[in-house]
Image 1 (cartoon, rainbow, N blue to C red):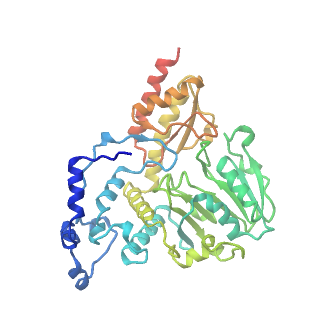
Image 2: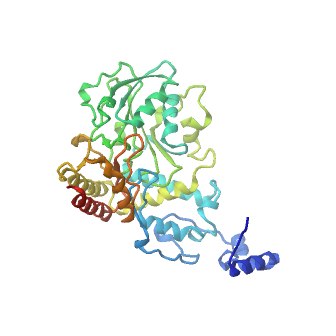
Image 3: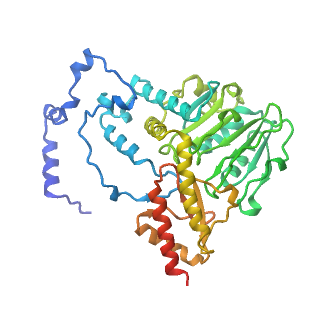
Length: 428
């Protein structure tokens, strides 16, 4: 095997190899040479955007033309201004002398980050004080087990409304820890609808009623929420793919959970909003990392959390508040989704969305072509135009455009224009 490097790289490598320790220290930026000032002068840390200090070399700004429109279902596109802010703070977070990735999760710097992230999320969703906010790991899929383990005994009955792949997975996982019942399933109709709530045959004395508020794969979304029939029964919702896309009355739910990687951050963070009286009754076999009380009692810091992911979520929450909150965000999402669905419905059958119109998702738009043989070409040509990740989930095929909060209107408009052009060239 032959390994080659440029002459300049080789020279640099040799030079670095022969550096003495003193020279190595001197080679670092002077902004890191602060041993004496750290020892004698405390650093004031705040998470407010006005307190940002550019103590590290400014990054080279990338041209917007270098970016693609990313229609992935998750991990998904993030707001460009959030990414640029994170880039500017990556090397030296607000004068702390270190990156967020290097911080102790118990240090004052990170404590200010996680506390502000929670505060901003509470503001966005108007979360009542009697609810705990937990920053967890393991994805929403881990919550499929955590929920019955924390809220049920092994013989307790619980109800699931199965509107797609994710609620089906949640239902099947719950069977390991309690007695779940699927009180409605859309599988026979290929998960293209949501039931009328009055038709649900709920189980008397069920501990909870579980829904998936937005099915990422099949593109169906609850526009309102069912009410549990039993007096002490609570409503639980997996909101992974429409979390913070619109206002939600948190008080209607006992528990809301969401993976962050679709609408509010990178992968690795799971957020749970749980009514505090539901915490502390887990089954004895519950692993410590799945016990809500452990995490609530330790302010999500029982073990090392996904620190950088939480920091990124915090930046997204700041951005959503700066846009005017979730009412404004919802209007933008309605506009984007309306443009795309109108293009599909106006194509005279060239493009087809199989979902019942009244429950179409604002976040995930699945569609097929009347000529399936053209779908691969559609995806290939779209990628050449810098529109990527439009291939539908492997279990359903076709195409899927995920147009989360961070997808700009320009991305949807470009997609719609491409769809019209593609149809004009192939609709013989």
